[in-house]
Length: 606
Ligand code: ADP
Ligand code: MG
Ligand code: ZN
Image (cartoon, rainbow, N blue to C red; front, side, top):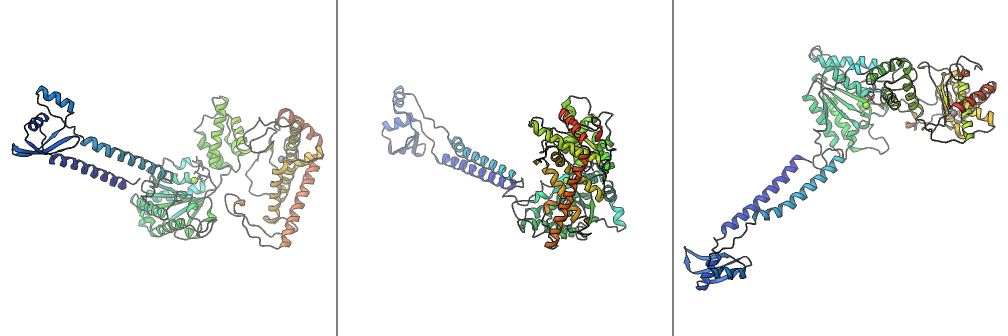
């Protein structure tokens, strides 16, 4: 609730009670000093009174002969029965009126105060729910909400695996540290720096590290906080943010999730949004109006650069982009090293090996992995986190938690065992496939009834057509095994088929690898970090004829891969039976338990 408004209300209450008190005091003063009731009775008996007027507390009237220069009197009434007795006793007696002023005031004021307090409580609750921006009364007052950290406590040592981004940001740090030197030479530091990369790669972290390294305050605000209910609030906040930062220079302004506020104007599901547009316009105005020589460095982060308004990325605004990408294997080792300090890890834990089985993991994933491993070890009641805990944690993250409670019919288990063994044997038969690490028929929480875990040896950047085709064979070998053994196929392969279809389509439309369609790229890869399907509104810029050819080529690729999968398994039929039997017996097997899964057996090559 607004302070000012609250004060006004209190002033009002105060004035009101003063008025009441004054009124009470005034009426008291007007009143004549009452005379004793016994005296009144005496005067009455002597017939010295006239014009009596009576209410239920007092009796007043005129004195026929003035007493002490007074011609009128007042007396407080006494209970008649009591009065009679008292008069008989001849004592002097007076009724005393209680002073009811304070009680009166309270009976007026107390309910008022209570109602007011209750109302302001409700009001505060309401505004808190609406993001605590101060609600109806204090539009645009963002002072308290701008989040400033005097010392972020994060340094470049806490950030690993993104060395290129760090190297580029070093320059900013030295600018912030030695600002006069830079401005003397007239050097211009980039106005706005945009950190671009998938979620969890450490963008927020590295921005804080810049502030920590330079020892300057860190003003941060998240784009999503600008989604407010009143038009104009966001814009006022942006203004406030820059104003405060200028006063604190040198410092860093960090706008997280810039995409939430910097969406292209006039697009999106709900059309234009006045509020966002105003906020964005204000941001653009501030960007233009501010001079980096003042010592304020502007950083922003997004994982969806493709939806940002082009005006934001223009020269002189966020004109430098730094990509913060998923770490490679070496980077993963470095990140693991940073985070492993937090837990009690056994000496045998080999981080290089852990990095090897976590391709595609981001920094946040790795931090989470270490935590999971520690949880697993705790559950086990162990003193230290072992290598085995790490492997389990990876499996948990990749395949989901085990669900031993899910009961499969005996026949279903058999089908699953052959299916998984099919994948595993195909993977160990074909060259260039990631070695099989583990095969299991323990159901996992993420849909799978069983799984085959392949452990990549290296990060791959280039994949040949032959390898892509082999991958398709491995994916289809599950269903091929079912067909081979039972002469019937099941729904268990749905997931595999989706993946196979993806690969086949990409071979044809993205990589230009189909002989029939040639080297043309028919579908562009969107540069969204969140995967292609989110922006599935790509335009089809080829003919119906080509569309049909694509479908045919895709089908042909899949058919061929399925046939090869059948052939591979036919050749290793005996091993398939033995492996499935072992799997049914032990539920989980590794290449150590079943040597045919070892990769060196490269039979049916391409
Ligand atoms: P982003 O902002 O890119 O989505 P964050 O910076 O919020 O990701 O990262 C979340 C957490 O993941 C960090 O607090 C940190 O613990 C961990 N993390 C992410 N990237 C890294 C990295 N490169 N080095 C060390 N830790 C990292
Ligand atoms: Mg972030
Ligand atoms: Zn499968």
